[in-house]
Structure formats: structure tokens, C-alpha cells
Image (cartoon, rainbow, N blue to C red; front, top):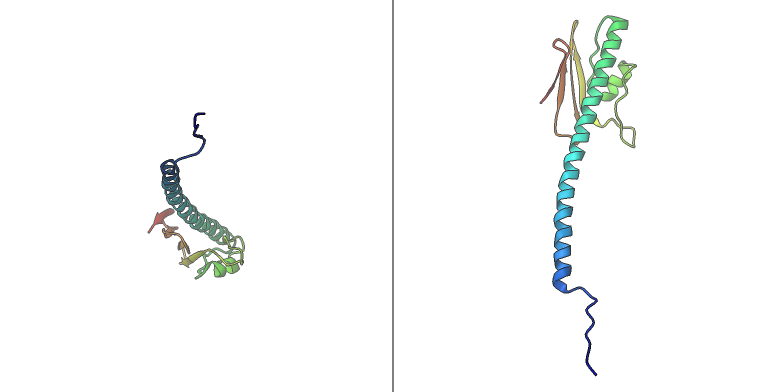
Length: 131
């Protein structure tokens, strides 16, 4: 009788190659995830600043002046139309967030607490900038 060997398994080298490929793909996916996350955090800050600008303009139409506020919570109090983005504990996530108002114009700043870009809006020029 002949001795027949079964070839139904994987060799150790094949398993190591597969594990290495999975590791490489995972490292690429994790770095892309972090980039997407940072982009979304910055977009939240810009969105809150745009909402704050709209609330400032609505307030100006009703009261003929702009208001200053030092935090998103302060702005939510003095600007009835403004609703900042909040986390699960109802704490605003965009901090710092502020408006410095003058008689005819205002400057707003916003940055997500975990974001990498601070946005600024100057009503005299109507332009959003990144700092």
C-alpha cells in the first residue's frame, strides 16, 4: 500500500502572508478614517459658524445691532435663532466659539474642540477664512 499525504491545509508561510496583507490594509484604512474624522469635525465647526452668522444677521434685522458673545452657550442665549452642535451630554462641541460685535459689523470665530482648523468670519467683507 502506498502512503498518501493529505494536502488540504495551509502552510505557515501562506498564513503569515495573509496576516501581513490584512495588517497593511488595516493601517491604510485607519489613517483614512482619521482623515475623514478630522474633515467632519472641521465641517461641524464651519457649519456652526455659518449658523451663527445667519442668527447674527436675523438679530440685526430685528434689533438694528449685532451682539457679542464669548462661547457657544452664551451665543445660544443671546441669539434666539442659533443652535450649536452638541455632544451626548448637551455640551457644545465647537469651542472656542465667539462673536465680537461692533456697531456695523462683527467677527466670528469657531473651531471644533477636536478639530484642526479655526474658522473666522468678518461681516465687513462677508468672507470665511481658515486660520
